Length: 399
Image (tube, rainbow, N blue to C red; front, side, top):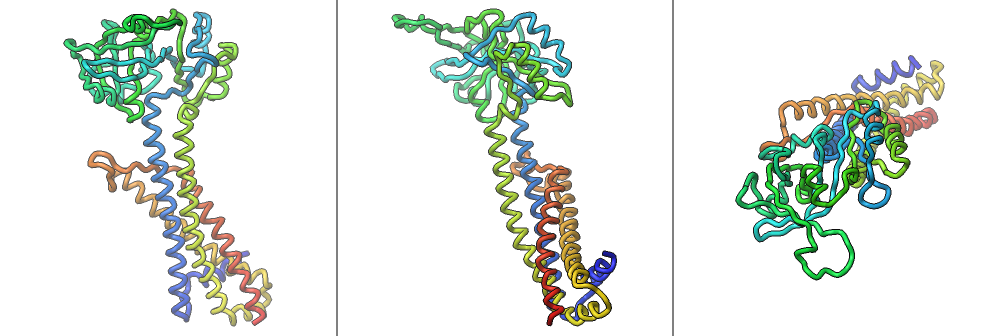
């Protein structure tokens, strides 16, 4: 293999007497460079957008969350709480109550979900980073934290004691309602804070203390809607989920953060795959230049090929010369494209070269998996392109 590689390097880096071949070779190398460069840029951009999109849901979605298998609530005994506390992989967990309610403020009404949380909730989810104005819940009085969307819809402010927010929830039971005022349980609360995550969550949720939500919804002391878990770094999600399900005798279902956002994950993965395939097609077209360049070199070196054959070089060795020439051109062009694209992405991370808004740079991410994808894509496609082109060398021996 040393002999074909030596000749291949000579053919690749030395100028041909035919200027057209030199130009074609340069165009082919630039095509490979541009293909690798653009592919890594796009993959890094989508990785950044993926991380940026998921960062919003990560603020409100725990590592694991359990729900009842049937109905809206499940019972949690003290013995089960003790078992959950003994799980080595669990750092902290938070008990929650969630139900649909109607909000009434002055002359405006709007449906929403109230989520009663305990004191551990802020340690399970990174909710503090999304708080806009005010303070988080305390136990001194009936308080709620509302989303930015709900705040705009109802024209809510914080700490307005002159105009309290009214929360109404239908009373459980059967039969005909004779007095509409008796159909709802209502409480008045003060808004202490406003959070902002994304439009969907901001328009949907409000938070209260667990005891307030339990009293409003008339839940028993051991009745909950869900439990959210924060796990220690490196914990095995599947194993922890099995342990939790065992504690509840298979009466609950466990979902990971990805499962809680399965639609978002599927959408992001589909978009990433579609863009990868499109740019791979562009790269395939660019590699046609490599095929053309190698074939042109074969035609230009016909006399040299016959000389090498006369000196004892086998047809396979001659074929390997041009195969290696194509591979060298592909790999070198791909590595250069990858190198310069990494530099550009690094500059974007450091200096915010491209901005979406005056305060928000375009999100990008440098990931090893993207480097590997680009290198493997270039290598595999370059292999086939070089193999196809090198096959012409045997025909040159017959001319």
